[in-house]
Image 1 (cartoon, rainbow, N blue to C red):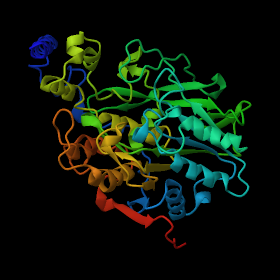
Image 2: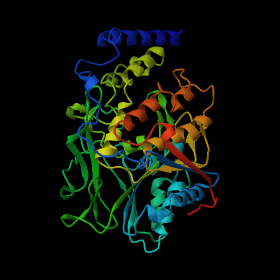
Image 3: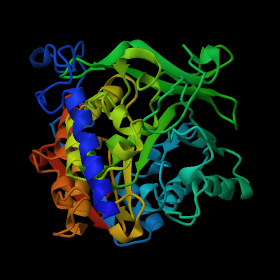
Image 4: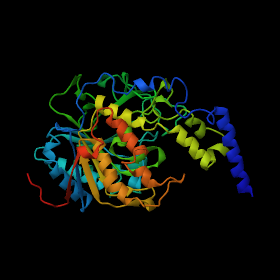
Length: 464
């Protein structure tokens, strides 16, 4: 009886709040007139003339897929398909390996696959460069989540992976935990706070916020581009992720910065559908720039560029509302997240205008068909995929790996079939819309007719 009464009270509280906010009678097309202004005339691609990123001259993207071996064996095979490690990395390069460290189990990048890739770099004859594992999980405590977890995906957590190399005499393998640079009194995704905005490498380590470089969403919202500048603990070189290595007052021309986007593959709820290589770049940008951050209140961060500001009411409301679970809550969440695919546009704009990864890798050793942490909703495809086109890579990974491993009758907590959310060909689904918005920024291919998939088994001979 008490449980029924609590449920009724929760529904009433939700209804009263929705009426107060005007959501029950309001058209779902925009939160306010200014948020929907000029939607028909804005496509987020202003002032750009570059070629489509990740696509070969004939308009085709190539995705490599290897399965059947250990993570290290799969990595060695896929690098062979790519033409060898020397085709990707130079002898003096500073190699930034960006994993996903925000979760654990399948939610973090498989560290055995990362180790296989780093081993190939360190095994290059005459390699004198360095490897930096770097990530921003958007939390205040740097050493948390995938850096320290005991629920590992692979033999190591990320701190242990760095220590593994350090203990074997590889001082040139280090880490850097990027940290947000601005204040955020009422955080919504991650609780990171900071005070380290910089304008260039001469200012030291921190984040650059580019006021004149922004994604303009179809709803007329702005998302400023941000990127980290950080100093290598090994060489003392300051890495400007956008412009290159810097030391002693000048940019260096004797080495390059190579950026390897090394992601996991998982289901990611009703609003995103799937998390893979494009979404992994959310661990590069600064989430305190724009709403819900305190500064630039008329702009939005990468996560919230397509999310209603009313979402903060759900988090900071009365406990009855905050704790209520039911159809009305799901409808409200769907309203708030109906344009989350614009995050795909913001990340595509980042790739086109700030920094494109030199290679995108998906470590699909352990994949979450229904959750990013719960092993009961995960399976082991024992695969790895790679491409210079992150859109095509994510499409193929979802179509060929994630979707076939998703149970036919599995449902998300709201009752939606998870297969519909994981299906990149579901044109009304969140993941298809997300990839399409990334593609619209001049990134890659989302049409399978323009994607060439080269498949191989670990250990299979590769023709030169």
